[in-house]
Length: 243
Image (cartoon, rainbow, N blue to C red; front, side, top):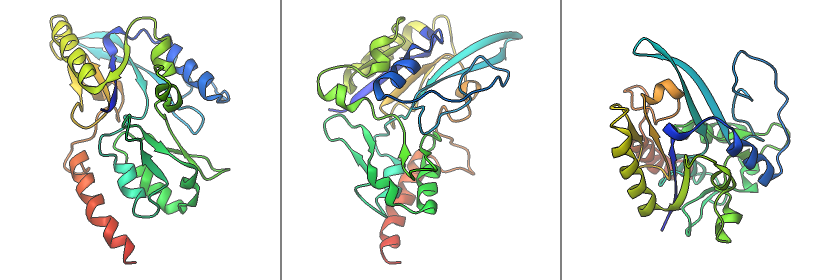
């Protein structure tokens, strides 16, 4: 059974413990940063930053409000990035059968620059990042080594408020629905984001666009939805093999 994150944004205080724990476990270097007018640091995900707590100051009902969003790869149940990469090298991106984790391998280096860009653009959440020096693609790996040894991902283990949860998919879906019912009493707009498509389920108290433009898969007519992306990949992959 797939493993799933349930992240309750109503409980997130932006302590950034998850962000630091991710860096520490993966032995990732610090980012060079500068003040760009936000408490958020760094400004974006990168090849060496798999997890980022985004800060958004928004106006809701005539009042200013802080929204916090611990962003990471969603480990899509049918991953558009993998669907695209499979057309070039089926070993570049793998899906772990035990956990459902979507994993970038060292063979992402074998993809051309254009192919890597296709992989990036296939992600409706704008997650994969490319290292210009090595040519590798990177993102959250669900702390696959920890999970296979019976441990929780580093980000989940450090969360002090219970915002981050991790376990079997059925268990997390039940927890998400239970928490949503509670939260709706205080936040009528609260909902679960892209529940059917991903293994990282967010409970948002406001419109996802207020948190970040890529928080939810874009369902606008001009941009392929998750379902349309899957269908496109399904038909494009055999065509690529003929060229």
